[in-house]
Image (cartoon, rainbow, N blue to C red):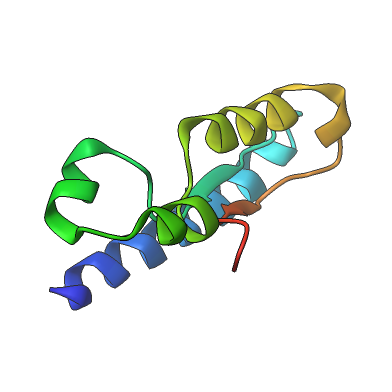
Length: 91
């Protein structure tokens, strides 16, 4: 059911922004990572995508790790209240 899923995602977006605003006065930055379809065995088994779709549209663990590394380094100084969208190459 997409309704519950989409409502939950919107809630995470709002929570991220709210916590970022609240934490800013204390020097705390709050951001989130919003990945697209993640390459997991469970997702592959249930959705049965082609290898090309996986390669071009799905997100693997390395993509998420790279986004997390960005957010914890000084490269992200000044980034606050952002949901960093991590999508596949073809999006």
